[in-house]
Image (cartoon, rainbow, N blue to C red):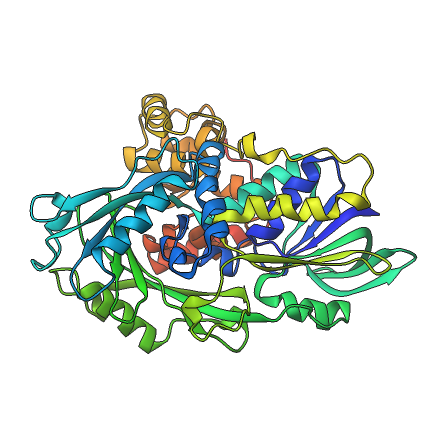
Length: 496
């Protein structure tokens, strides 16, 4: 009998599992695929307030999101770091005064302490203007943060497991029924079916939240969801500096261009209503053309389909608030509690930036079902590997480069930005690369893969190359095949 069973291993499910386990509850989390296998690994990779949401008067959502930027930066400085965003301006789009007012609010309503304030930029003199077309002569610059979205999910799950949670990947909940004041769940994995019981059920299935309510629990969804697809493209690096761009499009939407994995630029996102299986979401030709045109309207360098090295899409399960355009649908979350006999809490909407606050709100609603449950605790508790200063990644990298001189600075940088202080736990006492086992390419060694198998629930090469890392951008098809073969051999290796 668990206190809490969570369906869904995206950011909301993992965040709730961690929060609950840290309050002393016994927790089971069941994910039908891999952690962050759907929407939570298909974001624009930003921890941000959402500047454009101010236009829709979503002040509470923006304030909460802005305050969370620095919270997440402090508890996960290896996978979250500050970025400056350049917003070029020209006549015919949002007026200058409106943007200035929006940035003033953006600077002040979130309790900013670490991140620098916004400023005006002369793009004729600033390096950020070099790669833009000459008609963009002035603009603004403001702060937000970058996040490795899939690793944020995995680290929340790891911390939940450290606190006693039972994390089960590739495990589908096929039925859930109330029985004697609790829930009885039927779980299905590769070895067959099993049953568990839980006092409280949390439905954090993301785009499948309504399907779980109707098909697994046997209830009607109290809140309608609107599935909105967001698609992205990754191209070879378009500019040399480390700032990002926020482009205003003629249709009122915005588009980001973000430095990505050192050698690339990430461009996104779209907002398109979606019907169908969320697991099959893919970028459409129209979306690809839209993103190429949106970026091409600003950059001097031509961008065409041959520039694209990767495409991905994800479905956001937003609350259907009746808005006419997909980009206007609220990103705020709704928690629906049904306590008839045995409580079930369903999570609708939300965004990666506010996942921790969503988890706190969920536990506040569920607190009455557990006696003497401790209060909120996650705001000041570092995620695994994040126990160093918010601006200490460079110093940590220098220390590890000195300790492991046989590895390139590029590899050390990647390891620090993935594992933080746990990098030394992975590399151990190795004094040369041979001690790390087989090299699969791009600085990925067997010892790191073993860590991902043992500690982070990786099962396939895709798990390793596209969610635990983004090395899929760098490994050849032959290297990917070799990695998958090595992982599929099945015997427990000990890499000395």
